Image 1: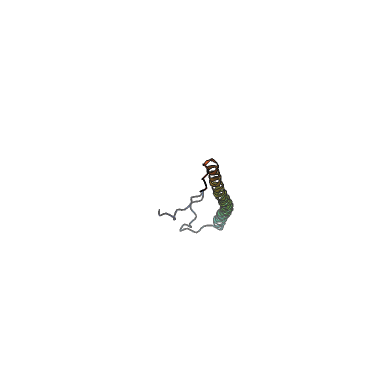
Image 2 (image 1 turned 90 degrees about the vertical axis):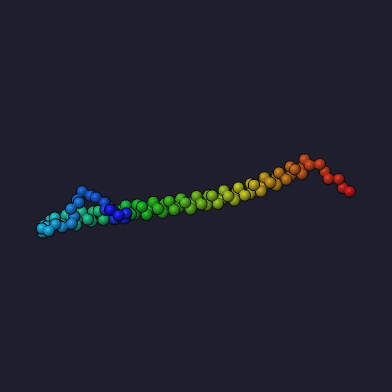
Length: 98
């Protein structure tokens, strides 16, 4: 079976009509089974879409968090370099004026 052409198996595998005529009761059961399966599929799809939306919200929140952390990192690195420069100036010998 090719990829993408897999079918899901259910308790009622013989959904295709046979060469003999089926009774209206059989047809009604088949139709009801198909409706039930469609409803289950639609419910799963709705849950998957809701999960996707939640994951998208989480991803956007994480992206904002990472951006804030990058800004803080840049700020802290700059402050550290400034403080290093201040310490170097404090401990370096004074330059004589000529």
